Picture: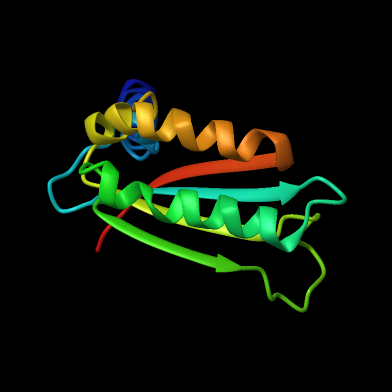
Length: 136
């Protein structure tokens, strides 16, 4: 009877450890699915003293990127209007969509993206970039 109980406990232990190993989340950097989209969220905090005209110059330069870089499949832009007061000084949000990590890899070093960086840099205090996969 002791041997049967021991074998039963070993079997339960093995099944539990197998279940735990298969329920771990996959690394999201390797998740590529044909029915998913890669979102690229960019938030800007401008230096104190940056004028509205200078911010508009940055907005216009960023908004021109989708017409210059074909890998950008979607684009949205907006200003923070949250009443929560948790924005930490970030005022501008840009939301890009890519079909793949390869498309994003073309966008990041693209000459037009680099030229945009030259427009932005004199006014930028901080930037936050967050990428994630989502289903459309």
